[in-house]
Length: 424
Image (cartoon, rainbow, N blue to C red; front, side, top):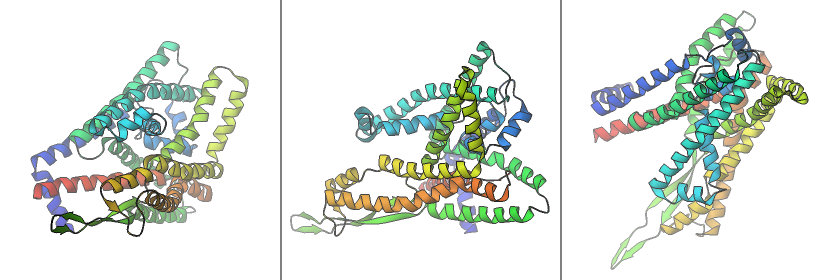
C-alpha cells in the first residue's frame, strides 16, 4: 500500500497539469487563510474569546465560515451565504417549475443557469447575514457601537469578503482539484486544530485526564465510523431486457442502483444550524429597535443555546427531520423509475412503473433512517460530551469531523482519478 501511495504521489507531481492544479489549490487556500486573519475594525478580542468559549452553537457555526467567524475577519461569513443560496435554489425546484426545468431538464445550459441564479441570490443573503451578525455582536459588547456610515462600510466589507470566497471556491473547482467550496471549509477546520489542541493541553489537569483520554478514543472511533458510513450504500440490482437484432440476440446487461446511506451529506446540519440561528438574529435586530420583549427573549434564547442538553435535543431532532426532507427533495423515486423504464431497465421481480417507484421509495426510506440517526448523533456529539464531562475545549466536533473526512475522501478520489487518467 505504501509503495502504491508513493507511486501515485510521484505521478501526481511528475505530471505538469496535475502539479499545476495542486499548486493552484495550495495558493488559493493560502490566500483564504490570509484573508481569515484580517479582522474587521473595533473587535474586543477578550470578549470574543469568552463568547465563543461559552457558546457551543457559534463554535459549530464557525465551521461553515471556514474559521473566519472566530476571528471576526473580513471573510467571517465564509461560504455560508453561497451554501444557503444553493439550498434555497434546490428547494425552489419543488416550488417553481422554471427552476425545476432548468435543473433537471435543460442539461448543462440549465445547470449553468441554476448556478448563476445561486450566485445572484448569494448577494442579498450575505448582506442580510452581515447586518444580523453585526447587530448581534454589538449587543454582546464584542464590537463597539457603530455609527451608520461605519455600519454600512462593515456590511459592505463582510459581504464582499463572502462573495470573494465564493469566487475563489469556484476557481479552485475549475483550475484546481476537488470541490473548492468544500475545501475552503476543510482548510478552516484544519487551521483551527493547533489552537484547539493547545487549549485542551493547557486546560488539562490530573482530575480530567481520563476524560480527555476517553474523548481521544471516541474521536478515533468516530473517524473510523465516518469513513465507513460515508462510502456505505444499499445496492438495488438492475437488469436490462434482451435486445433482438435480426437473428442475433444480445444478452441484457446487469448492474445496480446505489442508494447512499448519507444521501443528504451535511446539508441537514446546515439546515438545522440556520434554523437555530435565525431566532437569535431576529431578536437581536428587534433589540436594536428598542422593542420591549426582545431583550428578555434574546437572553432566554441565549441561555437555551448554552444548555447542551436542551439545545442538543432540538438540534438532533432537526437534523433527523431535515435529512428526510432533503432526501425527498433531491431523490425522486418517480423520476428514477421513469428513467429506468425509458432505458429498458428493470428491477428483477418488480414490475416497471408505479411498483418500481414504490419499491425504490421504500428502500430509500429504510436506508435514510440509520443515516439520519448517525448524522444526528455526530451533530450533537460535542454537546453530549460537554454535558457529561463539562469540558468545553473540544478538539473536533462531530460535524467538523464529518465534513473533514468526506472532503478528504473526495479529494483523494479526485487526485486518484487524475493520476489513473494519465496512467492509461
